[in-house]
Length: 69
Image (cartoon, rainbow, N blue to C red):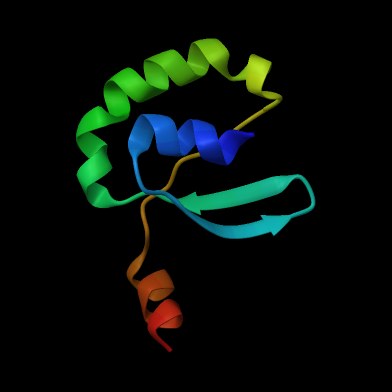
C-alpha cells in the first residue's frame, strides 16, 4: 500500500528491505526538491495509510560501500 503511494508522489523509489513491521525505501536525490510538499501531505495522510511511525535518514558512506561490495 505504501510503495504505490511513494511512487505516485516521489517517482522512482526502491524497496530495500522489509523486516517484520519495518519497511525501508531508497528515494533518489532528485526527489529532494519535492520533500517539503510531500511530507506536509504525508503527515496529514499517514494514519490513513496504516503507518504508526516513520523516519528519514540520508545514506551514509558506509552504506554505499557495503552496497557496492
